[in-house]
Image (cartoon, rainbow, N blue to C red; front, side):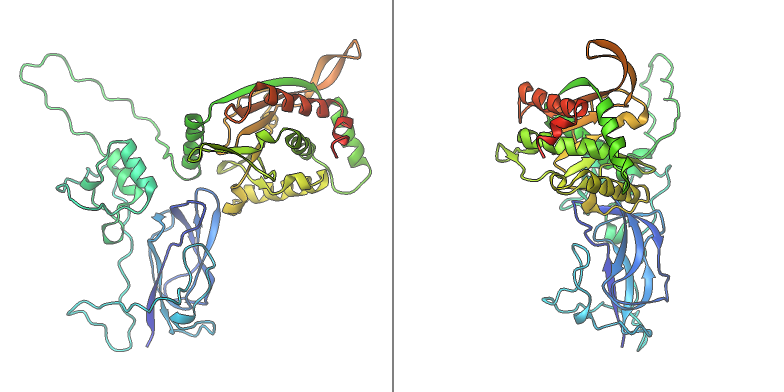
Length: 443
């Protein structure tokens, strides 16, 4: 007799607490194999195909495409042992821990689904699947007016709690639309969209009521945009940053790049040369490749340079990370930048590709601007900004000439170092840009 197993949205790692259903890969009635991808979801960091640890027949799906689900909410139910999937196995021999937070746990006994009295399923039939997750209430739905409850509130996601707290919403007064009354972000957002009750004018009050605020487009601050907003806000709250900058003559660097690319082989990008200069500078000034541990009140200097670089995509700004950049040459750096950029534009970066950076290189010159004071990518301690490289009048060898000039800026955490260290780092970078032979001394 088939046994119906419920597969819930697993913990996708990196502190992610929810995901949006982008595309279902299976339908009710389909036969699935163990570890077959069943749904494509979008987290705040990447697009992920979620494999199911059970093999059998899909008996129910939960959530329409576009629905946002918290970690732990049901995704599908599978009748294990039904259908003709050759890979299907009993519950106690399911898949391994393919994604963080799910997979077969051999230490637990199987739970049998209870059938309510009076609704027993006929012999041989699959147990009834739980009801699909309810859709969010319409924008005009009023805030639930149920009496405030005591005891724990049915909320899984800390982001939902924070959203409610930031906007003064009492979660005890909301009715959750999730399974078993779970309060979802959509429930809080519906409460925020609900019209405020009209104030009752006091007897004899003078004056006309205040005009309503003009209607405008409202863009939900969620997903990638929400994560970026929270991270940048945290950086501003916690990091006492400062910025220094310098103009540099990049003519010799551009000539060196042209010479490298003239000999054949993979092309070397300007970003790769700047990255190699950064890793050499961080070797001289390791204070800037660090993080601050507030709990221990310590500065942690990191042994490897995991170099983040800003990449603009249709989904917004992302910062892929090149691991162990200090061990790569310009050719290897160019190849890795190209690979990660392609994945970023396709929305296929894994969460691990977007975390763990220790220093960020931000080439905002691609937007046609000369300078910027970027916000540090928390919890890092510094970011090097690079403006556009363009022809400008410049005094070269005592004479006025047209040279390729770039503005470099360094934003740094003033807790990890003082201006002397930051200035020394930036001056070394500028020296290497102006004379690549300076870099050769460090290789």
